Length: 95
Image (cartoon, rainbow, N blue to C red; front, side, top):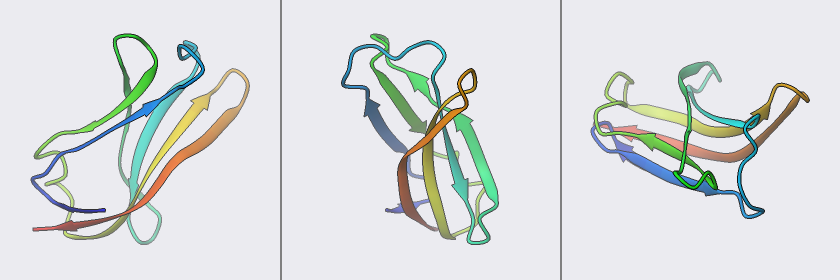
């Protein structure tokens, strides 16, 4: 995915088996080429609780430098020790 620093990224991750259980949470992280996390946040849920919503709004990427990154989204449940990566995409940021 190629994005400019002033662009937004909106992606919805729908849970097809009903509603998302309360103990499950989703997070995104942006990692640099050394695999260090440079930005991370928890995803919101849709009003009907069936979708995790990745919302990186215009301007939120401007703190990063142009270059190559990795955008990952994970779903986690700390109670049972569950973590699954549901999205993994190269992210190229440009001026």
